[in-house]
Image (tube, rainbow, N blue to C red; front, side, top):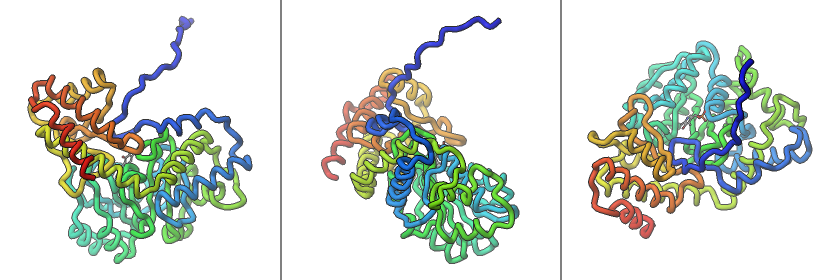
Length: 396
Ligand SMILES: *Cc1c(COP(=O)(O)O)cnc(C)c1O
């Protein structure tokens, strides 16, 4: 007989989550998580679903009919996009300059597609010339890429990529997991066909939902598939029967509390204004960057191509990656992320996402960061970081 063990009451530490995600939950969103749940076909919930759809259309800047939250994390959004759009034998051009581009490639392959990879070094963008050449020499009708590559801190410019893709009659799938709500993104004006995100990055919700929006052009490809979508759970033609069509046919039980949460978070974003949120992220990121540079460190991504929601700092040779992260967590209750894949040990990733993108957090981080660097033997003139950041706040 197994000896009964006394399990302690759940008591997680309250950590400032300045990493690649999840980010901290907006306290106002946290509050609705304890609201009573209703049935997934309850008239009250149907109204909440409608609000959520409208607010997501606002946030994606789209009129797409198919705009809804997928049940699952960001990767579920990716899986939905790829498994619905890609059929066996389809050539899919995938732009790979980081960890999440690799994940898209793997999903294309697993869905029976043939990924044609255009690669760049992790930390660099994909140039339009390389893209043009590949599209001219392939039959690919689908292009997939990451907008904000969370693994490198790079923001991939979309305008030329979309233009070239459309010139070749290709559908465009964009991973906006760390972009939505955190940086300029206009799905309809750009002409993106499929765009997905996640609740726990710039939307300051718990992990578990992946907002997605799909154009009519993309839905036409899905409706004309010769084979069924392999995944029953992520089949958009089934999901739309519940989420979008008025007959509201049960597909799977909606995660009620999470829908409450995202509806509240989007309601606050709407109240504040999307463009204002973009500007806040930009300003705070710039302040952080100037502060880091004043400490004598360098950013991983090139100026002009830096994502405002995720700031990748190059680690100086003489400094131990892990000691810094450990010390920030132990002494200041701040969690930042390590590098992934080839950038492991080479960068730290500091996320400023959603409500976490604040003046207070920038200053707090810079102050703490300077102290732990000093402790590891990295010298700095006191307060250079904080005062450089303050200059940005004053000028913006
Ligand atoms: C976080 C992230 C994902 C994966 O999302 P999960 O919620 O971890 O499944 C995909 N793409 C990008 C760019 C991300 O930052």
